[in-house]
Amino acid sequence: MTIDRFGRRIHYLRISLTDHCNLRCVYCMPEDMTFRPNPELMQDDELLLLVRLFARLGFDKYRLTGGEPTVRPRLVELVRAIKQAPGVRTLTMTTNGVLLPRLAQPLAEAGLDRVNISLDTLDSRKFQRLTRWGKLEDVWQGIQAAEAAGLAPVKINAVIVRGYNEADLVDLARLTLEHDWQVRFIEMMPFAGATDLQLQQAVSAAEIHQRIEAGLGPLQPLNNGKLDGEARVFRLTGALGEIGIIASVTMPFCAACTRARLTADGRLRLCLLREGEVDLLTPLRAGASLDDLRQLILDGVWMKPWGHGLQDGLIPLNRVMSQIGG
Ligand code: SAM
Ligand code: SF4
Image (cartoon, rainbow, N blue to C red; front, side):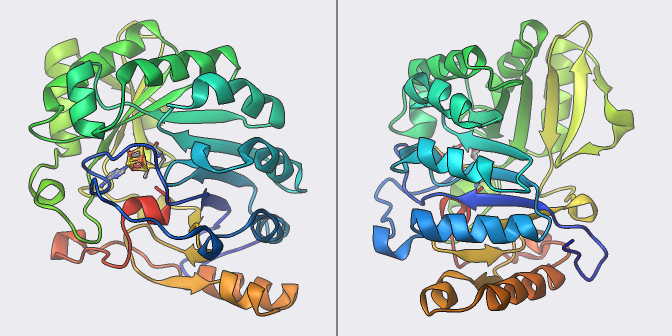
């Protein structure tokens, strides 16, 4: 069992399969983003070795993310191998959904349990403005394909950006009236090379909450008002689905955090919003034993930070979101 110095049990690993992406969302990366060359990223055998090690240490919950995880070559085979590793209980994915129309079924057959699909607006022009390269119709078909493949309940992730989609969040929330989905609203966070947009156009969880209630009526708290993972979860009267609000900036959920991240280049990162990392790939390539790697993981987890410094202007500078694995 992996425990940190604050007594938190850390058993949820989010793995970035690649920093590459087929979209260029304005809140995530610049249009001319440069990516890491493939040899610098974990290869399939290296990734599987590390997953088996984490699983033996008690990590039982896994999420594949990126960058865009669906652009990774041999993704279906990789999913099958990860899900078969002893100790891996749940395997989910966060994706922009563009490639799900052809991948949802094979991924479900390979053992993927569920997906979170990013969708920030239901207006196709605004969607293209936010993602720069995306077509709303592709993502909508991706959501249908995920449901048809049984990757359910589908969760929708929406980042709210003032001047882009703050007026659209009511339409997104309305989806839960007729669909058994969880629509989750995420406060925008600043990362390396923080843009004016990240710093000045964020919309707080409190405003998101207020806008939904003004448009659609009262939000009833679920789960006794307690956090469900990183989200506070609500239901609109008579709705089939749920609404999640993720206040990573204004109300961090550090006490309930059970997660660690493995970056695409094989670094163990203990907090999304703190720069500290433990390099696992370099020692692995240099011939470190499994015991050595195990100790690096245990020591890293023990030192997992508490709290981020965004309110004090401390922005993580060493990587952008797509390189860490959101
Ligand atoms: N490409 C996939 C996707 O978009 O779902 C997975 C990776 S993406 C980095 C993971 C999540 O992070 C997405 O829901 C995305 O909207 C969110 N995200 C990206 N940049 C963000 C930022 N600056 N602040 C908050 N969330 C962000
Ligand atoms: Fe790509 Fe996801 Fe970042 Fe958008 S949020 S640019 S889809 S990694």
